[in-house]
Image (tube, rainbow, N blue to C red; front, side, top):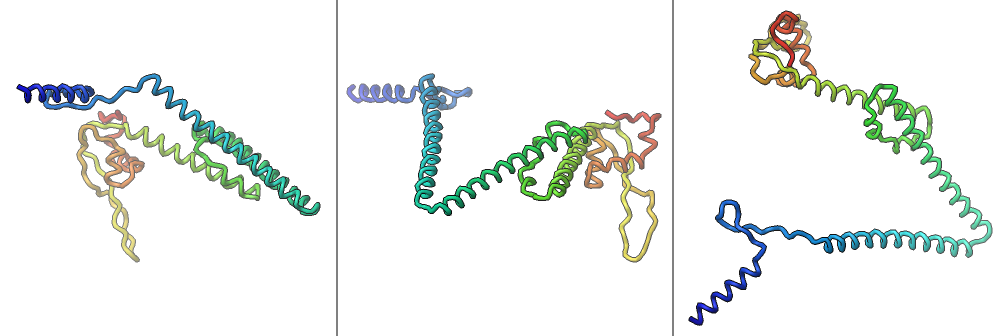
Length: 241
């Protein structure tokens, strides 16, 4: 009887310790219920994070002040000529940073104008980096590099639009011809032929995927259209989905 009482007490204690376990949906075991944080715990975490950020700001401010004091002390030990040279270096460095910031701002405005002029989506202007272009001293070269970068985004937009538009084209079941270019031979010229591979269109097929399969590029779908005018003509029952 004493053993039974002892076992009962241990079982009860174990249940109390594992009160966070609940039977799973199949009733074959238990799974741990994640502990929900209380409002006080969340507040404490936020307070700790805020204090960490505040400490960093204070530390940065102290380091900046210490540097100013060190520079001031170093200048006091300098001769008048050395002090003047140090101040001139600081002035030039500050001016260079100011000029760089102005150049970057100007390039960003140029991007806005170029994006609008080329008819690009306004979101693309945030994808065009200009900070590295600001280091180009020649203004004409800088503008040339920026223009090339914006035009490259124009190509990207056209590819995205083409992909979005023609991936949705669907056609009815039909036998279509996929033209294959004849193999090139050295020192001989052979005329192109109209022969091609036969492909049976399946449900859910689209021109983009077929072109990608045979030509390795979905944008070559026009070759399929040209080779199958009888299917893609206006009188044909084949339609674009």
